[in-house]
Image (cartoon, rainbow, N blue to C red; front, side, top):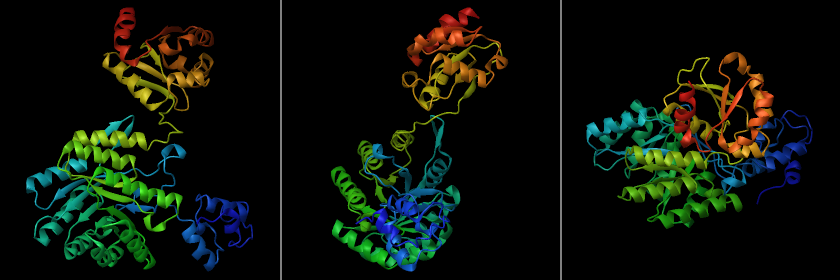
Length: 448
């Protein structure tokens, strides 16, 4: 059961020294209760407090750091639904290769994994991990493939094999990578604990049911090793959905520490559409690592776009920096367009202007990441607001053109904008960005 702030305060030194960053021990206790601070910030915490509060202040879902620089973070989630707060650490996407794949195919896949990028609303998305699975009988073939995958991609790996000795040698060969070892069952999970501990890796526990899983994670944690993941050995979409939901709910609502770990799933249904549906479910329902069966650019684009949407803070939309953006190669005489700093709006509008074949300027004032109509309704996209921003960046000295095209949905600000920006001619553009190209050909190019 979670401790309250007052209960936690009784275990603190009560010196109000402020060295933890809070004004009083009570304020610090409240932060600990809300899981917004770590007990290590208190330099005078007693051993008893560390023992009691250390466990109580842990996040419901364990934080794991992967990669040589430990920059890939999993877990640390505190809510069941993103609208309650936000989901924080994205589901890591990995691509699987088998040691029985053809050599040329392996090289090509590893290079694709290393070089793949997808740009979406200003974000550069990449593949996070490589999964290496032993399917052949030769231990050394598997170990050599693990070394090659690490050398080529420098991404953290997921190592999967039923051969404990093969996993041990592979884990030692990439000791500095902070990767994931996937145990084949309960007994192998126990045997791999010292291997994972000595080589700095995370261990994914695989068992047949929840009772065995919670018992085993509790046992391993009590033994002093806590860098764990959960591998649910499910056989259908419904089972997978149910298992992950039960585990997350138990960890967050009931404080079941034995289930408070990120999960890992391997998509290997044999059908691309089914794998895609499974991948979507992983991202929507608490997946820690989602391993795709092979490199597929179409599947990656779909899952990465979904993941970006799910893990965007619903209370803080993705924004671009407010400023004057060049589209193409504009001159001082090029026309000026206006939109908000909501990333999706910016990239759609700038893309349509670019597709029209003209060069122009795109004026993007601070609108707190809102869309056009939302910003206007909130008073962040009025004529006076736009004019103030134009004055702050000294728009008049940057361009000679005095034509500014505003979105058709806010035609009502045209009069106020002309009054606030003397000498400027306001043109009301189309309501939909998709109509910008025809508008430009009819109104802008004719005029020039």
